[in-house]
Image (tube, rainbow, N blue to C red):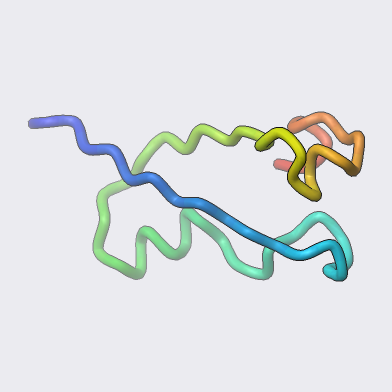
Length: 61
């Protein structure tokens, strides 16, 4: 089976509260009929997540 890659860019303004985007990437992929996948998270430089000063392990559970 060929490996597929799905690139998802999440954007959230500074006015949001908490560390959640309000949806699940894994749930979204399942409802779209996509196969189970490994998800790699990264904090983009100068994004609200980067400016929060939290490590990725503190944001993703």
